[in-house]
Image (tube, rainbow over the protein chains, first blue to last red):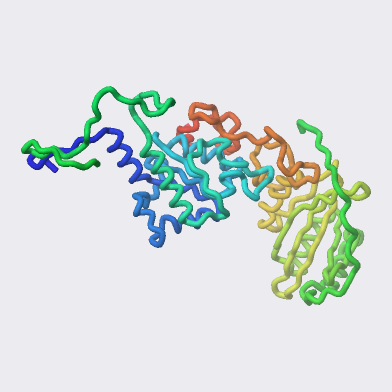
Length: 184
Length: 219
């Protein structure tokens, strides 16, 4: 759409959140059998490309969603934390499966009892291993979380505040001055 | 050891009575090899037990290398299948045990050898000079049970971090570990990785967790 046909008004948050949520690039931290299901999640049958996340990024510098799939030993925890710290903000984390979420059946000395001991986890997926649909659901939860983020500092702790200014009705303003209805 | 550990255990059931093992195969019948060992090294074979049609040869620690050399060079047992340690945890007998499984590929025979060592002198000669395959198995046995292998070229821990101070498969080690004995990474990027389990491998000072570790030629 160029200036000859009109322009589009919206908020920065809407555009940024729309862009972020529909192009999440997962960092596949496959540690055990959950990683096999994660491959199915990225493969053609379950086709996570429908949600814009088909581009798995094995470089942490290019990823913004870490899927920790499988049990994590104390030794591996340091490597995972290093990869997590190398990912650029904003970033999100999924603990995939019972072992990543809580240690699962590996209730022993060598396995971290839940990766939330050293990582900020956004979504936990139960299951041993979870089906790819469950991973897609977790991805959709993350997308929902991103769409509700606000970039402008405002106090939302007591709920959305009523503005004294009349809300701007988003619409498309055409070059001859008409405003068409409809949002983004 | 920074903390004295104690094992509260329930005595195990009695061993099942000897019965005919229908699955015992000809490959486990190695009476001729045992006889040859007893003739060649008198006193080396301390005991021979048979259970379910399988022979187990107990060898004195001092004669282990001689016996293994003979097995490899004259008796044809050129393949070391397995090597691991056992914590028997009995007060009236040597506590630790290392077993070796050999295979004679040409004759199709299997042989199991065991060496028993006391707790306060848990040292076994390493057979890495004869069988290279023993390298990682001996490291694993050292890592899990604390049995030292004299003459091993690189006796480091196999699985646990190198500064870990316990031996997890000893019976007195609690299943869920000792709290605080294994470090977790810092929760903030600026945190120091001072308790890095790979510090010895990197032989460098700890770096920030978001930085790449320096390569060897960058130091």
